[in-house]
Image 1: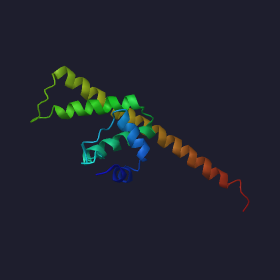
Image 2 (image 1 turned 60 degrees about the horizontal axis):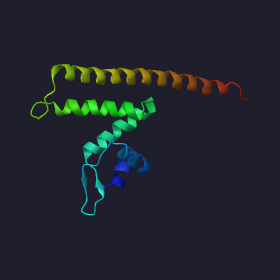
Image 3 (image 1 turned 30 degrees about the vertical axis):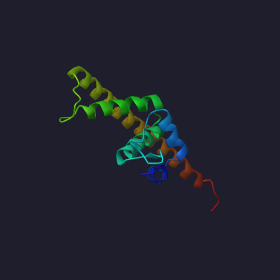
Image 4 (image 1 turned 90 degrees about the vertical axis):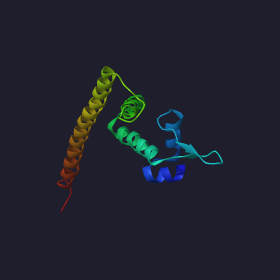
Length: 130
């Protein structure tokens, strides 16, 4: 699919998608005969990971580290050529679990912030004349 369709599906601006390409987070899997980048569903899924990490405060380096870890683990699945040694596999699993825990903690913090904001908005009603 072309970048405009990817932008529509991911709700990311074209410029942002190109920025992610430039820094190597997402690389289009193919190119059209005219040389334009073409994206697969896997590329879109990768962009969604990047998009979902941002509001949780993960930076580009952290995003790259997580994506690299997930890629290496996926390459190690049965039937693939990748053979990770057990120590590296465990390190990658630990890293992904660490991101999962960090994401859960950040979501909990955001929920608390939202509850406080809703409380504040509701409290303003009591200051309005009837």
